[in-house]
Image (cartoon, rainbow, N blue to C red; front, side, top):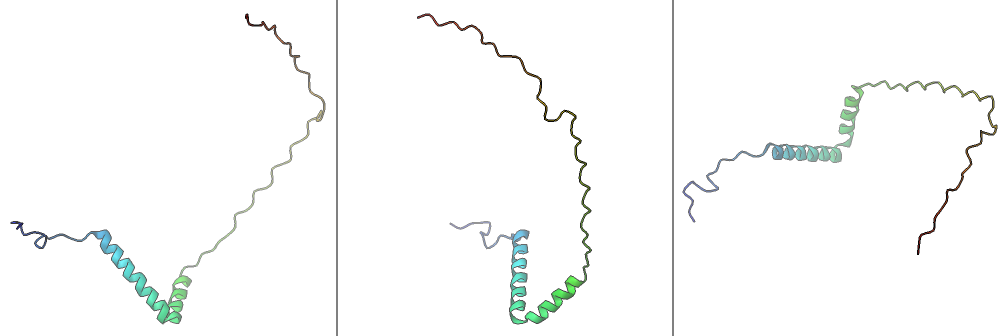
Length: 96
């Protein structure tokens, strides 16, 4: 049962960077939530000043001109050329 290498307590293992990042983000979110709950006016003033630093001009794109209407053909609505007539082929009855 005794581990000669020192066991788990003797192991020097660094924490995973993703875990550290997740813990930091959770703490920042909790701190922001507390500030919003306890001092909403101060947080709103800071948010407004941060948003005011970024000014964006949005312009709508110009609409393309409508396509020209197709010109009607001279014989529009006239009857087309007749097709070939279907002629049935001979059919043989199967032998019993």
